Length: 232
Image (cartoon, rainbow, N blue to C red):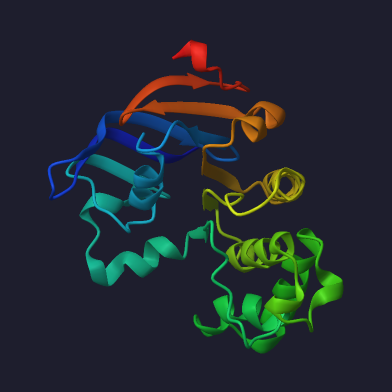
């Protein structure tokens, strides 16, 4: 089942810079896909277009049955409810506990208290933080804070998890811990994961699908691939 379709997508910013050129890509349910390439290759722009932070200049993006390019601003929330989003910076509420940070994502959509409790504990168990529910962000390591951010992103059981450089602030050991968490979510929940990264080590260790971008163009799309500079 196809969850994401990117058809003839070009993104040009107002300053004249073209970040993505005529891109075509399909992502199926349950896929784990890396977008990789050097700085300015277009991978973060592509992620931003998938959750409608940016609009394509031309072309079509279908995410979970919604035409993102044509979606009115007032309807963007419908798209975001289908998605979980994880950023490089954790964006946690500093004065809220781990539990409260994750619960917040459900409270804003008016979920019942009993459902919130059940889903929050399940999400925290999946990321290995069930024992830290009462702690605050400043009591956690960077890796643990990112796990809280991941738990918040998956608590409402989205079909798709978008990750924009989620290990960018972490050392190699903590980065691999985060990747194991994401792999577990992909396997256990069947969540489709799309991750932008510049970390070749992660890509080559995980051996998932790799989409290589260079100067806004798709140059290679490999199942269980590795990133080899010579290949591009």
